[in-house]
Length: 198
Ligand SMILES: Cc1cc2nc3c(=O)[nH]c(=O)nc-3n(C[C@H](O)[C@H](O)[C@H](O)COP(=O)(O)O)c2cc1C
Image (cartoon, rainbow, N blue to C red; front, side, top):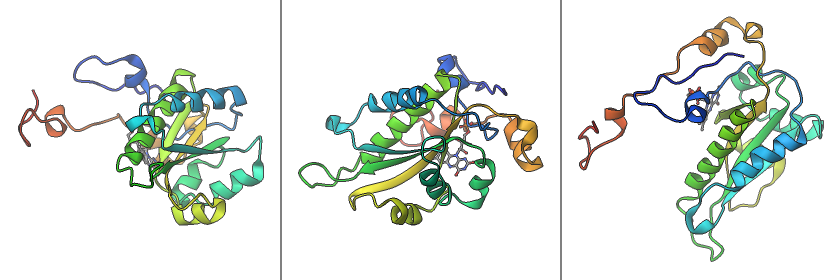
C-alpha cells in the first residue's frame, strides 16, 4: 500500500494527514459491516439545524451487481478506467429543501461534510475512499429517480488498496506524485480579504 502523508506546514492529526485519494483499488469485497461503519460516520456529521440533508445510495457489486453496473455506467470514461475493479460505489446526494419547503442553501456544504466523514472513517479502517465529480448526474438521475428536490452531488469509490503496478503509465505517475496544496497564506486571510494569514 502506498502511503502519502501530507507534508503539512504544522502538525495535524495523522488521520487527516494520512488520508489521500488512491486509484489503485483491488477487487477485494468491502464487508457490509465496513460499509455500515463508513455510513455511520457520515450520519454523525454536523449540519445546519441538524437537518441532515445528506443522502447516500450505495452500490455494492457483491450485494447487487445489476445496480452497481447501472451506477458504474454513469462514470466518465476516465473514472471507469480506474474503477473497473472497485467493489463499492456510493453516491452522495443532498435534499435541497427544508421541511417547510425553503431552499437550504448549505445542504451541499453539509453533504460534503458527511462525505468527508465517510472518507476519513474509511481511511481509519484501512480502506480507500476516492471521491469523484466525474460522472453524468443526469444519467444517474434517470437511472435511479431520486426525488426532484434531491441534488446528485458526488460519487465515492470505496475499496481496499490495490497494486499500483497494475495502473497504466499516466495513472501510475499520478499515484506516485507528491500531494500538494496552495500555501496557507493563499487560502486563509487574516481580518481582511487578501491579507494572508501568517
Ligand atoms: C468533489 C471531488 C471530486 C473529485 N472528482 C474526481 C474525479 O472525478 N476523478 C478522480 O480521479 N479524482 C477526483 N477527485 C479526487 C481529487 O483529485 C483529489 O482529492 C485531489 O487531487 C487531492 O488529492 P488527495 O485527496 O490525495 O489529497 C475528486 C475529489 C473531490 C473532493
